[in-house]
Amino acid sequence: MPANSVNGTGAVQADIAADILENVAGGQPPIRPELGRVGGVSWFVIEGTPFTSAAADSIVLPVEIDVPRGASVVEFRESDLTALLEAELPAARSLAEAQYRGDRGLSVDAFLNSRARNSIERNAARMAERAM
Image 1 (spheres, rainbow, N blue to C red):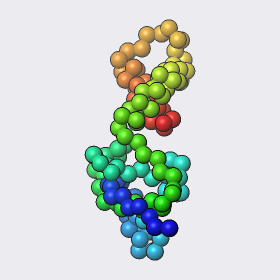
Image 2: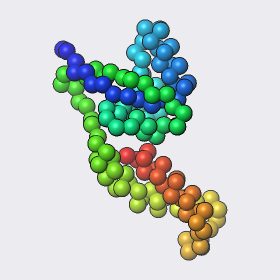
Image 3: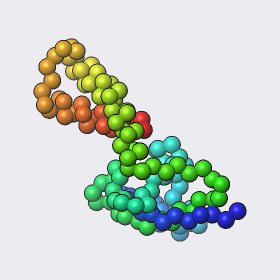
Image 4: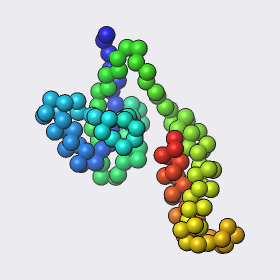
């Protein structure tokens, strides 16, 4: 069964780029999502910036993705991802605040300064992204 080919880019850290080269040199597939920490998937950008959750010093690699005909492919547009994130944020904020207060022994009505609020918001954003 022939595959559909889609071109895109992926931003990876230097050690991941080295692993990709080792895979190719060893005759294995370059990208091995089953070894990752995000549920056995790989994320690639086929339009726009490839810097999705990657460090500023990441290496941008061109990728060609072969999708077998009839295979199930999940594609997200930026608006889809934004809607998913916005749906997850309220629960993530509540959980992040509860964890922050619990870790510090603060009551639910104790004042939180801007530094505490910023920390809670950063943690909530990470939680919401993971939940997506």
